[in-house]
Image (cartoon, rainbow, N blue to C red; front, side, top):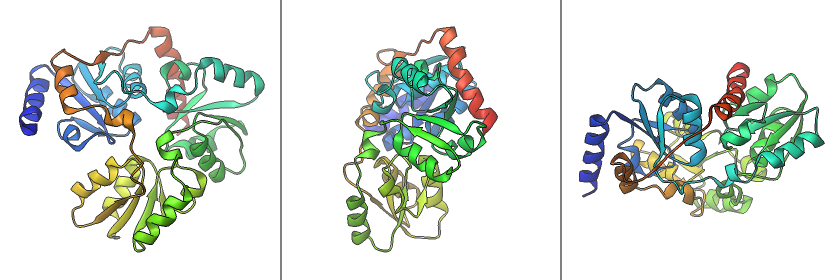
Length: 303
């Protein structure tokens, strides 16, 4: 039955000239029907290069918005309209505008995990993999980093010459993991390397053997000569790595590292969207796109 649904999706996407994007946190059966799999910004670049005029995003809303921002001429759908992002939704233009008034001489750095609307008033975007490099390349010493204080703390440690102001926000899935979770996992798997996402708390990150984005974690694990790994990010990643590297052993840092927003999208949702029975078309006005893309253009310029 599952294979039948996948085959029908593959047939329809070819027939209707549709490109399917899937974030790495999606379930394996969705990744198998996607044209491109990866991190959020990476997917938006792939969508821009794709020849198809219609794009389906299996991920969360801010990711679909980024695709639309970089490919405004394309028709973009969020496969499951309920798939939001708690981190992206925790700050809006009003909050950041107030912060800018409080710190007028600060450069506002926005994590890519923010809404298109919020990006319109920020100076530059960063991804988890580019944040350190870009902040280092900003001329201004004073940095206001939003919304993830954990990623911001990681950048702060790597860029001690910068005066980085952090705001209390972040990813609930990564932030709830504690140092005791790391201790427990290492006791259970003493020979395993610990790979972690910088959205985790500083006391978790500092115990890692490797710190990086989702794609970087997967790439490190695949290329490493080590045979055992504790994966400190959304649990879908340790599952995907089990498929990619069956000769290696992968363990979740915690059974609680599950993003409900990412997991809400199902294979049936993809089929419904491709058939015109589901999903939500992402619509952004030209002025929002212009201002928000400026934030991303600055990221490209700096890093």
